[in-house]
Image (cartoon, rainbow, N blue to C red; front, side, top):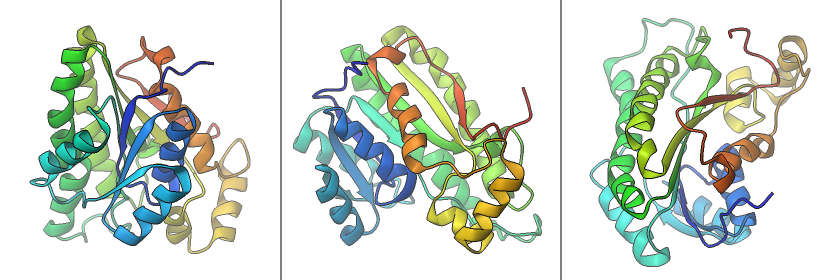
Amino acid sequence: MDTGLEGRVALVTGASSGIGRAIAAGLAAEGARVAVTSRSRERIEAAAREMGATAFVHDSFDLDGVPGLVQQVTEALGPIDVLVLNTGGPPAGPDPLAFPREQWEGAHRAFVLFPMALIEAVAPGMSQRGWGRIVNVSSTAVREPLDELILSNAHRTGALAAFKTLAKRLAPTGVTLNTVLAGRIGTDRLTRIYGSVQAAREAAQRDVPARRLGTPEEFAAAAVFLCSESASYVTGVALPVDGGLLRSL
């Protein structure tokens, strides 16, 4: 399949490892000119070298720095055609009432305000050029809340509602907005939640119909498709990549 991504400029946030890194590598493999960000200069520069991308240092909590980031990417690579929004998950905890207000505000900043700031910065240009792809990395928790992840449950769901609203508004301009929902994907975050890789694998064997963890590359394949020319009639969608984990319709 010709994805139509050759020469397109893509910006992927949180791309130094895991899902973000896999998506960036997938876009680069399709010929896109990829900009990748992370708050760690060492890690993002190492990842960029591996995949042939261009590294930029940015923290998702820095909303005021978003216009500057977009300007840097545009000056280095050209106007942004593809935006992939990926941020690390907030803390987990057994007591949903134990999280301090600062963590609630931080999760809102990372999952709602930061994506919106980037969309506000790039969507007008995409609309003027008549082509754009915006993909948000989220979690199946927006469909079936997870007991120890109340911050993710609350704020990722809000971002999903915002994407649905924006997708309708931007569809006539050739810009699509979609969300990919991660199930049990084998990342460092999942290992931290379960305490070890082995524990995560055992839980997947027990709970996931596919009887295994997914890989970041499998998740990335779905995200890259939604960034492609072939996905031009797909917008406002929340696509699970979860090995059949979700029970809801």
